[in-house]
Image (cartoon, rainbow, N blue to C red; front, side, top):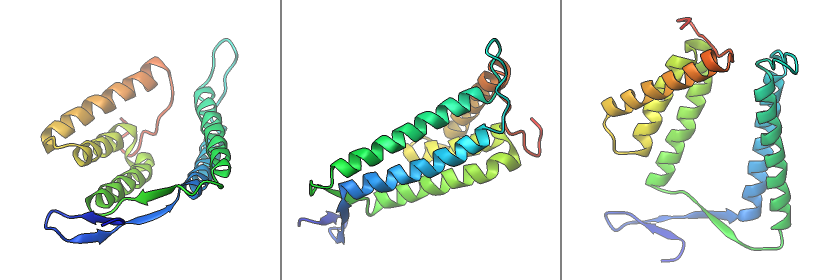
Length: 170
């Protein structure tokens, strides 16, 4: 049954595959788009002085690293063109899980400026932890609250990085 995945009930489902080098090129291109938009936003923040860096320094460094990694991914994809390796695209429950993660991430980006970093992060982390584990909703929420509170404290109070405050101004 090459090319098919088994379901629990014994039915088969077609498995979609594509050339590995194409996946590298697509992911590299997506990374370039994301790093470009991230860098554009980061360049709007103040850089500060060498003695006291501003909020824009760290995001610019992260954006440049993402851009370099994306270019390296494209380079690796171009080097793979001669190889005929195939990659299987997720199917069945794996495809459902992947789709959920994409929807949750898109929702996080939409909710972040509206609800602010702490609340949007709690919602995102709760759903993400639940999608990736068998932990109860209550435990997911507790973990998410701890993660969001820790990240907020780290960035806002220790590193003085401004984060979206949203409608609650937390």
